[in-house]
Length: 141
Length: 139
Image 1: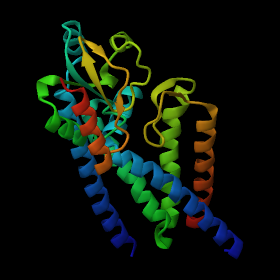
Image 2: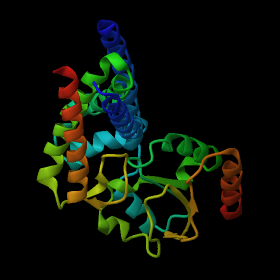
Image 3: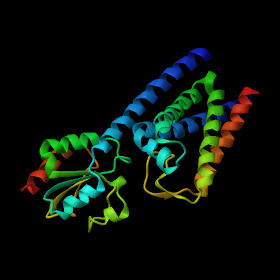
Image 4: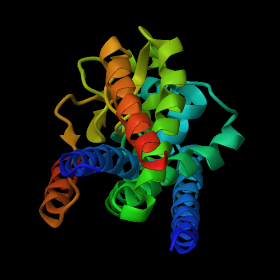
């Protein structure tokens, strides 16, 4: 009985470890495709118009779905997608008037200035998706 | 063993199983966050090693839950809880007073939080209970 339990435990251990490891590699890949802080700063200084999708990949693991959904509604070059956990305090200072950066959030950007009236993406159900679409439509040029 | 001791043992096993289940599930659901805590916040091992050891540790916590709730594996479950607590305490104690970006990482990822005596006492209590119950069952 003990040997059987150990074999089953070993199998569960293997499956869970491999699944979690895959998640780590996927998140690493997403992070590698994110815009670095310097590039975000440059875009804002160049009076960028569009949207900013602020994520914290370390705290919120399911951001991949959010990115895919947002990119279906906004052209990729019209949205700055960045991971706030890689930003320094100086980098964060470029977003004046916004206090809580740690929730995944979508904001419109006009002439390089983020509108503090952000959409906080703390849920991701169908009702929420509709509200995100409305938010995007209302703020599109 | 006295009936009340058996009841006490099961209450402790269920209590520890709940704690470790919550801890392991949160770490497995956000494996990337736990990996970053181990490799960047605690700087325990290199990033390459952490891609293997952080998921393994979270998965092992889950296995401990199963062992604690399986009568013929329960004693080993208590021993493994004690071993994990020794590991956690050896990481927490040197960093007491440090403010960690994502909290202590014990239960998922939180807002920046200081590692306090409370975290250490809580882990020490689990260690003592698990060690006593494990030894009682094996001896």
